Amino acid sequence: MSESFQLPDPLFRLTVRFSNGETVQHMMTDPLDSRTITPEIKYAVVSSYSCQNPSLGSEVAMINLRDVSYIKTERVTLDQLAGEHRIGIRSAGVGDDRLPKHIAQIKFV
Image (cartoon, rainbow, N blue to C red):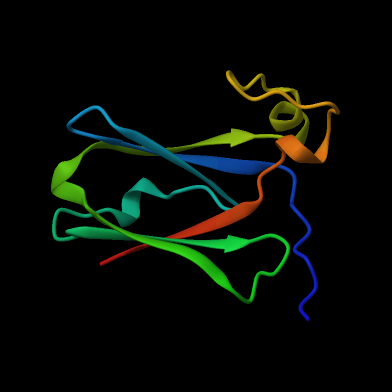
């Protein structure tokens, strides 16, 4: 059995907004360097891994960059994540239930 992944502080929230208005978010350990996105790059591959068992990938998404309005990262601390109010989600306690369960990595093709 693999050890769980200790979340670093700060994390970076990856936000991808598509031209149809849909937005997806992932949590990453490193910021996105916009200089790596050149006009020749056509796709982004976002791989998510469980913090409980990082040796197992949980999701892989291939994003066609022609369908993307913007892609960015923003720095967030663990305290900010723990304090965020999520609409429609009720929890009895405050703490780990609001921290990310998955960490993502992004590669460009």
